Image (cartoon, rainbow, N blue to C red; front, side, top):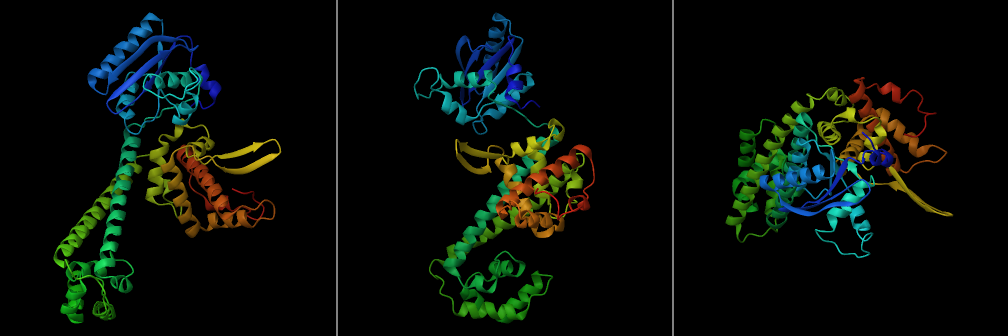
Length: 424
């Protein structure tokens, strides 16, 4: 992979046709430039359809033939999901793909006409100019197992969001109808609590059932024994409840629907995790990552799905930049600004690494020792948050070494001499 601007500029040659495309939901606009920035043909408008893509292909072929261009590079902004189908189409035709940063388009759109105007005719030319100058990012569209894994991770996240929404709605229901319930059970979706909500959702029904019936119901439906004291606490809480009683019939139906949705979604998450594991085991050396204490399926699956084929990287520094975890500093003259994360990269990858590191630091002895060293060293000690992000970078380097070389994870290598080691 070429990442320097010089390398990208070198790829734009005399025989290269630079195409800038402003992608929309239904309609796209495109303009063409040569390597010197001269426009070769008037703007073309085409739709997101088979006919539209065919019209675009015909237009590109006509411009290429008329101007002796043998290579095509197509640049565009990553406008949500609208570019996926068009990107796949261009990749099948073996056109080189380039993504430009929307912020760069916004800041350079006034260069030609000194006007802040933004429209469908202007944007594709601005995009093409950025590509010509090497100010783009190469597009990586994962194939086969990596794309499958990425879709599986997306679906797991969607299902997780649903469970969070359901949880919030059930908590709201309890706050209104049975606020004392959460004093008896810390989690409403625990086995005993869930059975109680299914069978005795309101204080009135709890009181009618009584302690003996509640305990009997638990024994029928839960293999793990639930103490009688919990049933007594529940009855006592129900006797003092301030929950609303009007509209109870409809509200109980609402709670039942929420619980049904929750149980269905939990089963779907379990199935999705099984699929993620199956796909992950098909990626060379990915199973070794799961052997690291504190590293779970979600962290590894998200990392592999976002990074894709590890062999397309020459250095873990490129992955650190991909995650937006490289450092930036704002300095001028005598002013030296603070060093911060750039956060210009894959947000999902960055968040997955951060969440994984929180778990790792709680359970993994060697990482915990390095973190302690980072925040307690005499020279330039790091804050806890700075150390966590530094440790994320170390985790990326470990993942890179394991996936690219197939080496085993060795905790002792991280702790050869913790007292004298440099910060992560």
